[in-house]
Image (tube, rainbow, N blue to C red):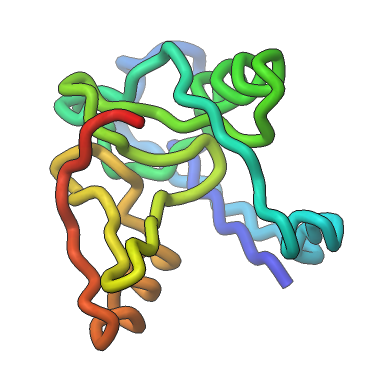
Length: 146
């Protein structure tokens, strides 16, 4: 099951400046986890580095928001190039994350993932993988673009 908790600023008149006496609205949705076709588990996905960049210095970096415009545009660009998934670089051209997931690379000796300073979402899944892979010598390091 996939559980999504969404918290909004609440009901008010339009405009970003109206933040006084706000009561947040909380929405909880539950759905089945999406499944990939069997071939994906056997052969994997293809990925394309896309032209858009993740800004690791932006004020909302590290926040899970409902703004999926970059991810959707990146996925469209990747699919037009014949790939299944979009890979984003940060403003310094380091691999950052994919459109729909964090980025992990198994080198044969260690699991490598971009550090939070590159701007990936520091979510529960990423933290769990880093924690579980501790015995595999999980390293967080900036990597040049692919």
